[in-house]
Length: 308
Image (cartoon, rainbow, N blue to C red):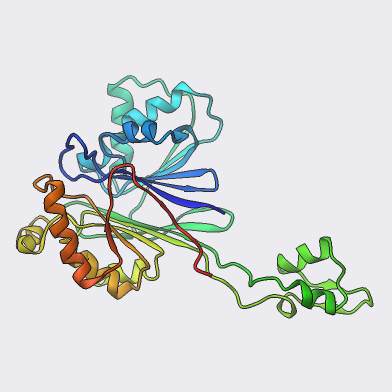
């Protein structure tokens, strides 16, 4: 099952010619999940040729303009196609007010159901058949949430030779064993899944954190992420300024990644003061702490693979 992260925008505060505002889309076997929706989101969706009408849910970190100004356009765009399924939107308090006001003032034509759910505390906010999305509070100048999408664990690897040796004929019974069911062999003996499966395997985990002070609890929430998207808005020399504005430096993001034992850190939400050349210094400071750090770029695509 494919899991891919598409970086739609990487900027903070204001868009630049080659840097849209922060937005990340996660595609999981045809389902699309959008994390933040800054200005320029539609442009990147179009340039990546993504099927935006298939967006299942949108997760908003907070209601500062650089994280939501792309949302009205997405809502109106979705009315240009046939859509039978509801669109779920999650975010902190006042996200419902923002959406309703935008719909009323802009006189939006919406021909599908929009389900808005405001988050006031951490916990699971969305569940699929074999995964869930959790929200957790961050520390910014207004209510702000981070998110993780985590898949359920998978059964261990199936060993056909063991099944055959136990008298289970090839066919539907093998599938049932792989699904965790007890079956009967040709001689009537019960065969349990653990007799033919290896050790259980983990699912994958994606985490999204932006616009917050650095604090230890973040590492607990994003622990063992396969792909961790985190703001690295400032360089080390501006740590005091970052603290005053309730943001974090790239170095602080790297320390969180190290503590959380994530597989890869992708920095995002860069200050508009930084040119592409300046960002190389920001990256160096993070890699001194956590070598598996990269700079996310607008319209970059990252496959998230199983590790076992």
